Amino acid sequence: MQAQAHGRARMDGNAAFSPMANQGRPNTSSATGRKRRRRDPLWARLVVVFGAVLMMLSGIGIVGGKALLARYTGAVTQQNLLGSAGSTKPAGKELEGPLNFLLLGIDERARDPGNTRSDTIMIAHVPSTHDQAYLLSVPRDTWVEVPPFKKSGYQGGHAKITEAFFFGSRNGAGRAGGAELVALTIKRLTGITFNGAAIIDFNGFRRVIDAIGGVDMCVDHKVTSKHMRLVNGKPMWLAEARKHGGGEPITYQVGCRHMAGWQALDYSRQRYGLPGGDYDRQRHQQQLVKAMVKGMMSKGVVTNPIKLDKVIRAAGKALTLDTGGVDLADFIFTLKGVAANDLVMLRTNGGKFNSAKIAGESTEALTEESMQMFAAAKNDTLAEFVLSHSDWVAKSS
Image (cartoon, rainbow, N blue to C red; front, side, top):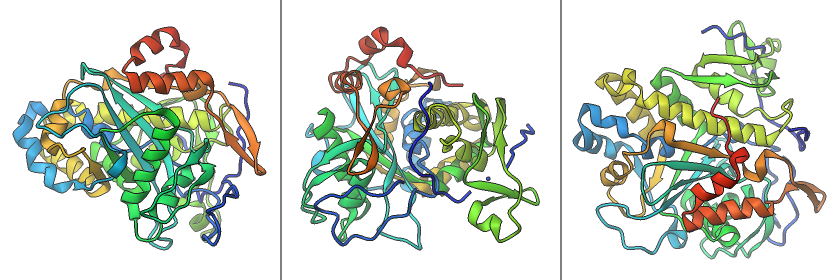
């Protein structure tokens, strides 16, 4: 990929990591009076949701199967996130047919409540055979038509899709309103209706990775963190590091290594200095999801009740999950046939920029082939799409 990254960075952030083991807002008719947003999210949209991991947790059967799984369902926050955007199919004991799940990553700060965007937007598609899964990313800068949303008082307009969560969450509608409006926006754009959804935040993801014991990641292009630095060997956000003399840069060198939670998250959110910019970041985020699935299903976790307990409870604290009315234990058990190696990661727009200036902002548009990819998810024909677009499959390492 030869395209250069565009847009402005904002995160606070890390220094040369020696491995030992926004944009401004587009003007819309509905934007009047809303608070000016931070330039970018703190964690720059980590690839989403531990829900993706929960959906693929077949290895849990080794230590007790459904009964053990049921023991932990109370630890997971469940909420109707999809509302009118959810599937109208009656909920039953098990999920049937092809399934599509909306996965959202957010950075919800206590000091700035109500000013949240969905900076990671992914779709997990499971075909009717329930033996595989596909991960599709929706670029956060995709210019879309956001429909009116009565729950938050949003009148409708055009904006980057990352803004849909903000518009939907206003006036007391909260996370559920934000997720619902993102789902409605994607449905209008692609025709996809969702069977479930999940939301997770940055700190929750880090705790889960650390509970797993870290993840194995492969760095394919040298990159220096724009968000964190090392101060006396301790990682700090850039703003905090400046208070302690600035610290040392964190650079991720090419090669495979084991990463702690903060390292994996920081690496997966880099885009500046990478040849493919945000598309490289999307790919690295997908890589992280797959690495987490592998870590969850490793014998070191699923055969160790103490570690498994720690991992699942960490996930429960971080995750908000909508199972479409299906009992959570049944929901996860239905998808037990999907293993880590069955995750196929697809590169939206073939991993290349398709940029346009709109209202003075740099935005992304979905190509005709990307629209065909999303149509294939809607029609359960992604296997056929992959056969004719093998170069769209992202490497997991």
